[in-house]
Length: 115
Image (cartoon, rainbow, N blue to C red; front, side, top):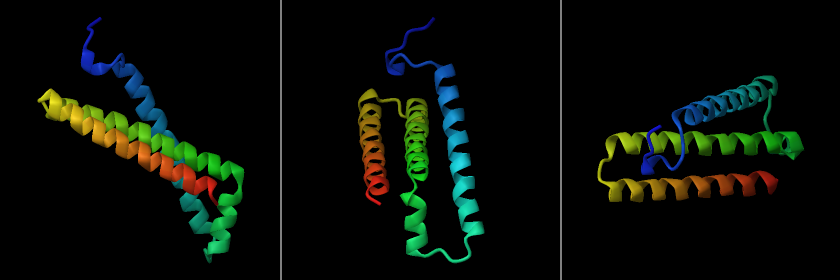
């Protein structure tokens, strides 16, 4: 087993499973939202608000937002570790992207539960 400080204890199998599972969740959420638009002839604010008033839809939306965060986090880490060689620059970019993803997730959480 090779120990590398840059991996922070992660393995390729772990990343593979996370990427595939988050991709499945995102595909299902996309199909759900597309199905809603295809079966709802006139989407008004009241109908949209009614959809998101359902607790299961809120949970599914938060799960999808968390999936986006995890999927993007792994993807950004892989791209930066492959193409950005200076450790300080790579670490700085990872920090900026990580904070941005957390802010996006918190924004989604507050938006969905605020409905």
